[in-house]
Length: 287
Image 1 (cartoon, rainbow, N blue to C red):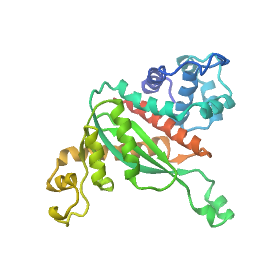
Image 2: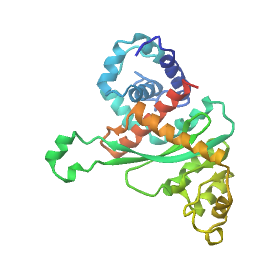
Image 3: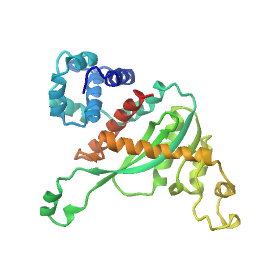
């Protein structure tokens, strides 16, 4: 990538603004060869460039200006990055994801929520074919995200390895979003249509728009106060903002890849969070 590319330099500058909130060292006994912020920026860069640990460090060796921007006097070895990726807690990455809104200046959020799937890397087709029928089934990781529709920034995420109904992840996502900044409205597709979904949103002070299923069922036979309201009518203009969460899912897969390379579940979750942080910074460079 061209070092003169402003967006690439801006990416690292924004990354510094984001990660500066975490402590430089995990404890007073740390070796202090590298700060947590520097290692975290490298892991986010790994997702931006879609390379392995070895290729990331080999690439950075040819980019002294980037090393200066990150504040590196020398490059870490791959084991240092891998150990830090295992050591950092997922809750820290979730907090950083929410902190991305601080870089947008938004005071009140408009949110859309949707889910998508990512493949887990499990070898080539021919390798799996030799292993037998059971190995042919590709594993998936399900990602549910809450997106701020004006800036198209990911606010909160839930990652799960088992198939489950979308509504299971709705409450945690809405609670995380409400803790970041006040939320004016949340829009969702028909997959979230349930009276409980409306109740959760309204309890958190959000306007909620979910198109009701079974349009042929008359209002008097529709269950739920809020679901009846939806059948009487809702703002189509507000609801169509939901398409932006699908745009985010598309960009996320197209630019940062639709495959998860980690083997262990805890590392798969972290890889998804690093991918989302890379997307947010990528998006912020374009706002």
